[in-house]
View: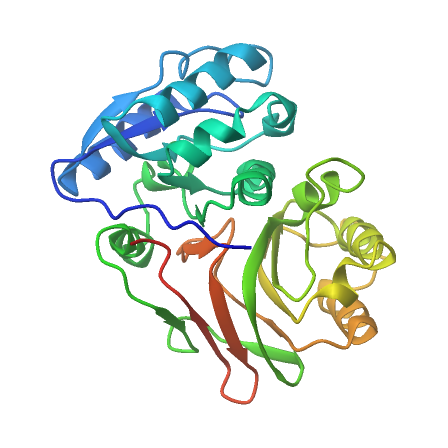
Amino acid sequence: MNAVKPNRLKKGDTVGVIAPASPPNRENLERGIDFLKDLGLKVKVGSHVSRINGYLAGSDQERLGDFHDMFSDPEVKGIICACGGFGTGRMAGQIDYELIKKNPKIFWGYSDITFLHTAIRQQSDLVTFHGPMLASDMGKVDTHPLSKERFLQLFEPAPFVYTEQISPLEVLVEGEAKGEIVGGNLSLLVSTLGTAYEIDTKGKLLLIEDVNEEPRSVDRMLNQLYLAGKLKDTCGILIGDFCDCTPKRNLSFTLEEVFTHYVQLAQKPAIKGFMIGHCNPHISIPLGVQAYMNTYEKKLIVDSGIL
């Protein structure tokens, strides 16, 4: 893949805000928008961000319309998702990927947005950003300074080095690996299997994270990835935050036992403990860029995601 990096932001640039999944908490969204303005950015909010359609922020066509509008608008230099939730996979088959190719720009989000990250990267080669969103993260009163600081990667290209200075890291399988970093929310990665947007992990560093899944569910999903060859195909595995993924019954494996089982089956270098996912702080990184992991030094180096 010839990764396409979007241009960096400058103070005074306009960024678009969309809700391609569930409707955001309005109060939190406003605080999140204020955060973007404090970075020196102008903000354009999608026409349907406030719509409510069951657990979706409007119909598929309305959410898709906001998505396309922001990519086609020459004034908009980056697109930040308001929140995750449910439903982005419903849009994937209707997205104009040629429009994205012609208008590459920053696209930022995580959780349910994982389906869009995967589809966009594999259909248009665009580097996207796995990071905290406006209403679900940045609009909360206790947002960690590190979560805020990592937004600055959008203004100045520089590699990012993750070490134990950020969080404790645990080596599950020793080794070194270098490759394109892909992945995101485990549930959403599994939901791509068997579709035109099936996650490609061949020779890549796979990042996984999730929330509110018991070990038995994580086991089921990792088993599906393993049987599909996706874990064996990787060059390395990065385990992010698995928030509130504790067993709700007495008879259960621990989450750590589940991870250990599958990374040992894969026999690829693996590290767990990255504060990436449904956590605070949430350390944002680009997806689709080259990265290097070294278990002996407990280090991950990720290339810049912008030009």
